[in-house]
Image (tube, rainbow, N blue to C red; front, side, top):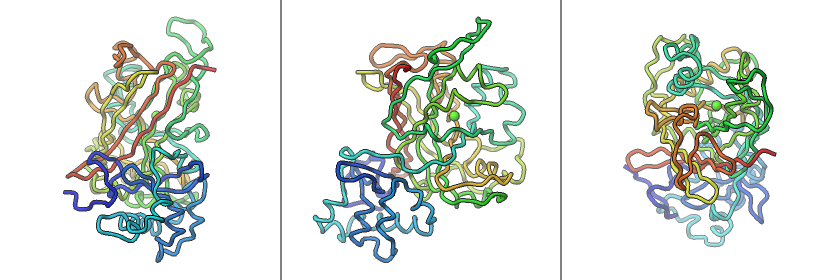
Length: 418
Ligand code: CA
């Protein structure tokens, strides 16, 4: 049962309850970039909160919250970021009047989310994407290789991943042009060049590294959570026709690096902790460095929508993070087992999250089964893949015993090719 409430009113289905208190960066006409949190439909300006002395005993310099990105704040470690979050929870809890009774301070500290622009929350130095949903990997293997041997021999022994490109990761609300590139239609002898015809999304989450490591160091599954600051929603846009032709033998390249979208709020691992759930039973047994104890999966409900131009969004998929075969802790242990170092702000994508049921598939490739089963939109039009001027929206949240912690939205629009 939810035992805590806030003096800021919000609906029961609000993502930004007193239990959440995520971190982000916003801008508006008066503010170039300030760190912020969210409650209800408000943003909480952390620079103003600090400047007016509300972080008193934490002894922080308000300039910490004036940076373009959260990296410097996050780098202070959970011994600082957790007390900051706990202090915000305390200040906004029902019954606390410290800020509530100061309308002058409230006016500078609180702003309507609808009136501000959310910015990319971290400077992402490096971006890695995994391939950790067993249903997604099975579907793709069934479609492109062999239904009898859909998973490649390594898949159940290590969390497969690749290094992506950080420069083209944008915050929710952006648009991008349909990529162009080489494709080789199945009946063609030679490749052709032109706009991608099979533009797709990938329903993912991502986690942000909060604690660096040195080269040579490995992070165990037991220590991995110390290095995970929090999670966001993530759309790893993909050009399927470019991908099919280029990916052998080194994996995705231009099919993936033209755009990816993150949601603006980093929901801390601490806020997600109550929603932990059992992970997959892994058979065959994994190597010792990938073993872990406790419930390390997460029950995060995920929804995906396509909004055609001048039409209402159509819900096309309902999935859940709990369908991940490999946990974040295992992904991080594997990523660092060779001594690869981590930096604060690095982003790790989950890989497309598909569930076992056809309405739980996390890409158009799977939902329309390579375009053979088109989907109906609310305006009557059909989709095999993503059309020009479609907006794709991911929503995600945790809910248990009347407590809701959500991510908001991750949305982007595909424009015609340049
Ligand atoms: Ca991906």
